Image (cartoon, rainbow, N blue to C red; front, side):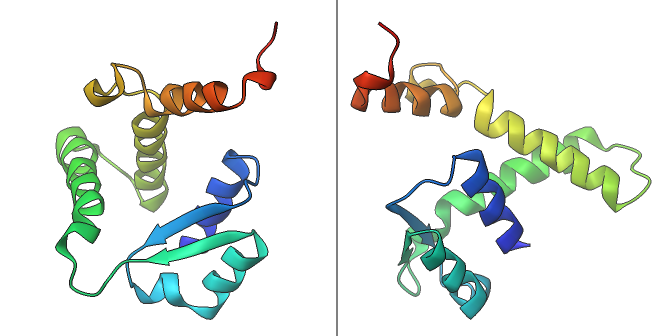
Amino acid sequence: MVLDALEQALHDRGMPKNVIHHSDRGVQYLSIRYTNRLEAANLRASVGTTGDSYDNALAETVNGLYKTEVIEYLKADWQGLADVQLATLNWVDWFNKKRVHSALGYVSPFEFEAMYYDKINPLGQVA
């Protein structure tokens, strides 16, 4: 599953190079197949320190939001795993691309990232 998520991220971002991939020390992120894929994609692995409570704070926050906003709030009459997967996909898409965030000047993370790259790469802008 984590390899699928990595592949999706790589393709969504146009196969970026020289990117740092940060994760905790979970076995799935330290596996040979996963680290080989990071290397093949020219991503530099960054792994948090053991027992660092700040390392998991973001993941725990996002997981908490997911559980509250999708699982508890929707309380949908899901017929099977595919329904949960679709609800999850829709929530992740909204969370990453559409929700506005006060710390980002009330734009979505997707818009904020695009503005950042426009700022550092002015040649990519239309005259």
